[in-house]
Image 1 (cartoon, rainbow, N blue to C red):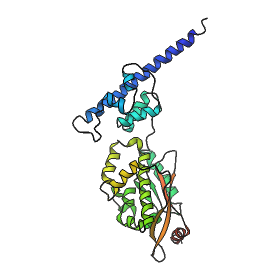
Image 2 (spheres, rainbow, N blue to C red):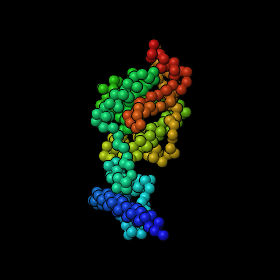
Image 3 (tube, rainbow, N blue to C red):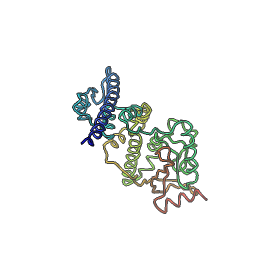
Image 4 (cartoon, helix red, strand yellow):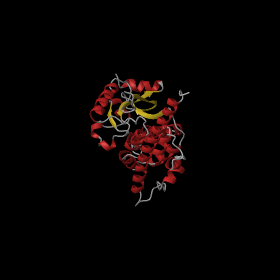
Length: 299
């Protein structure tokens, strides 16, 4: 008759543990919420957020008020916790504070310092073996290295001569000369626009957990100065997600005659580890004419 007592004690212990975890999670959420409320006390939020408990409950987590008054002790799933973090505009470190408070594995930060340098060097070793235009890029869309074929294709000088703040994918993609050579027909223009949307959606996906970081906001402010960026960025936010990059048409100069000829390129990103950054971005030929142009530079 006493066989069920240990089980009940285990249930009670588990319930107390859940209550303890939920309490420390609420403390962590409230700390971020109050911090964000103070941040916007003297300025108007673009979306008119007030970061109140009621607003958090209405906009992100319908059970939040029930947690606060003790009506519910059910721990949130990771997806719900990330939704709360999105509402609170959490930085990566703040997201990890919430995840750890709820006893979830934190999000992995990007490579830094010596680890990043080693990864960049390894990516560059891969890049130089490719017979295609290729560059080493990070999740910030900073271009750290590019092979000769890449520089020739886009009419760029040696990478070291370009100011660091201009060595980014948007600067190259939206360069007036590159735009002109990529939009020589109605079909090419449509594909180029799709390619631009794909690139900016890729940036959003790769940095979804860092969109409120200062570096992210700084990059967007700088890129908004580029012609056409703001328009494509806003379209990319609401457009259907593109899983595969569209074929890119452009005019390229042959190595033998210097003549401008139409080519077709397909974008491919090569990851060098379990992380998305750094990576080798390569442009593969999509037809025989493009292969011939590439081959002329390898003679």
